[in-house]
Structure formats: C-alpha cells, structure tokens
Amino acid sequence: MTALKAEADTVTTPTELDDFPTLTQRYQRELLAHCYRMSGSVHEAEDLVQETFLRAWKASAAFEGRSSVRTWLYRIATNVCLTNLEGRPRRPLPAGLGTPDAMAGDALEQDHEIAWLEPVPDASVVVAERDSIRLAFVAALQHLPARQRAVLILRDVLRWSAAEVADALDTTTAAVNSALQRAHAQLADRGLTEDTVEPNLDTGQQQLLERYVDAFWRKDVDAIVGLLTAEATWDMPPFTSWFRGAENIGWLIGNECPGGAHDMPMIATQANGQPAYGLYMRTPAGDFVPFQLQVLELDGDKVRHVTAFFDHTLFPTFGLPTRLPADHTPASSVVR
Image (cartoon, rainbow, N blue to C red):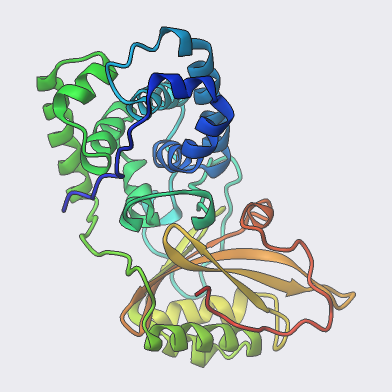
C-alpha cells in the first residue's frame, strides 16, 4: 500500500498552551480525523477529542517542549483511543462480516446489536490526503488489532518515525516495525487497493451524479443500473445483507425500496472524501423525512460502490435538514 502523505507539522511553542481555546480550535478537526480513523465512529471521535483536550489541559504545566505541541496532542489522543478500544469489538460494514453477497429474492436481515462503522463529514475534519479517511481505508483499519491500527496510522498517515511511535506507545522500535509489517499484511489480505479519491470531480463525473440523483427521484431502476459498474457492490448497515452486481442492486432498489416516483429526493454532501447524499422518503402527509445517507465510490464515469447508512442521527451531523417540505424538488446534485 502506498504510504499516505503526512499532515504537515506546525511550530507551536509551549507558551501557546496558555491560550488553550485557540489551541483546541487549531487542532480540533485534524484530531477528529485521527480519532475517527482509530474508532470508526464520528460520534465516538468527538468524545475522544474532548477527552484528549481535557487530559492535555490538565497536563499542560508538565509539558517540557521536547516535541511540538501537535505531536504531544497526537500522543495523548492515540492513547485515549487505545483505552477506549479496550474490550470493544471492531466496527464493520456488512461486506466485511465474512458472509457471502446476497442474491435477488433473498430476505433482508438487520442487526442493531452491531456497532457499525460510521461515515464522517468532510467539513468536520482536516487531512493532508482524503485517501486517509476514505471509507474503504477506515473499514480496513477496523480489522486490525488496536495497537497495530495505531502503529499503521502513526507511521503511514502521520509519517512518524518508528522511534517516535515507540516512544508514544511505550514500546520498542522492533515491536513497532513488526506491528507495521503485520498490519500491512492484513490490509493486503483484505484487498485494500491503492486507488485514490480524486480531489475534484471531472465534468463527466458531475454529470454522472446528476443522472444518479435524477434516476432516484424518478425511481428509474433501469437508469440506476446503467450508472453502476457491472460488479458494483452495495451495503446498507444495519442490514447484514450486501449485494454485488448491478442487476442484483437493481432488484434490491426496485423491490425493497418503499418509495415510488418523486418520493426520494437527495441532498448532496461529502463524506470520507467521497460524494455523498442524504436520501429522503415521502411520508403519507406529503413531506420528506431522512431515509438513508449514501456514500458513493466512483470508477471513472460509473458508480462502483454505495454504502447506504440507515442512521437518521447522521443527518444533523452532516448539516442536513431533518425534514423537507412537500413541494421540495431536487436541485444541484454535486457539492462543488
């Protein structure tokens, strides 16, 4: 796997710890990205960042300036995350459960007991490369033991030296190098690719997304199928079923999605460095309420993967409205 670029370090003097509100504002979003990679949950990550700042504030008088304040905060955040992960199961996506893909006609099953992986709003985080928070990468991280996960993030994402990681985790450089090697092997076994998230959509991809939104608004299943790659995949936590193949996905939308024509408007957002949409469903009263948050992965001028999160609490997190009026019609389909 190609190493991801490091978020640029910045010079912070110990005296800047005296202005803690400014310090927290400065590092809030990049620490949220770090804690999200570790936990797989944007809601948990918010709490972990607050705990990081609380511990840093209590320990600020003891800061000796042997590293930058940024490095010191990351060390605290990493250990806060490791403590939080003790005894907790990983956060998967349905396709990562090890079950075979579902076929057209299969019954859909839900599991609300699983703590599922969550998406993160682009607006909430700061990263040097969006690869480092793309959904496939974060999902693959969740398969690693917590300390291997921390080592890989600190070495490959933040680009710390093995000695710096060993110091942060109170271990040896040999143990760090061994953990990194095992982490790389596990990610390779999981089939994590080196595909990148393009920084900007080209004109063809913007038009693809516009057609995608329009096809859902009209519930034109044939049009939706035509926008997917032949081997596209679709999962939708908390449903444990996941689907492979454009035709199977078309069956799912055509037969299991309750909306009809002009019942499913979408509002564009961005999640994990990828195009995303809040999809709404018309109610008997005529207005629209949150139904699912879709995160898309593109392959040229086609959609190759969709994760549809059936979690209405994500809509406020993404700044999406909790209701749309009955006369709402889809507008622009792309966040530019």
